[in-house]
Image (cartoon, rainbow, N blue to C red):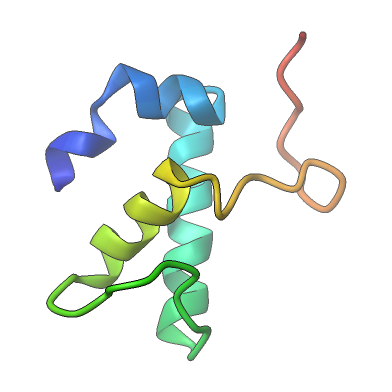
Length: 74
């Protein structure tokens, strides 16, 4: 599953490696504080695997209005 974090497709979906890292860390923190997963079938998955799947399924994205991360041009 860690290999998926290196996927260019996943990096491009979010807008870069830094943004992917920021989004992943924020969502991991939310899950560790008790937020519910946004995907079905989390049985046997780690929290990191859940976050990656949420990103792949477009369940989570960066809220540029609420963050200090610059929105990509385009």
